[in-house]
Length: 95
Image (cartoon, rainbow, N blue to C red; front, side, top):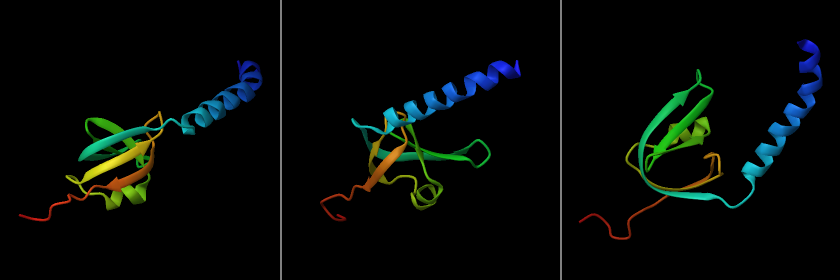
């Protein structure tokens, strides 16, 4: 079994690199709406936020800064990893 793994290892690594490269190329997915929730997955390895009922992976620093209820516009890869996050501020001030 280990001999098969030895020969398949380079092909598996190449496939992962190719998938990652294709995922990072345009076109990007735009998601806009309220931040509904935040969650830490896989023993503090992945941090995700929920916006408009979609799960988007973000880095830990961004995860800590964002607050539930904020109105956001997110540009993400096809695999829903955040590329840029913009806070949307209403044009009309408090009434």
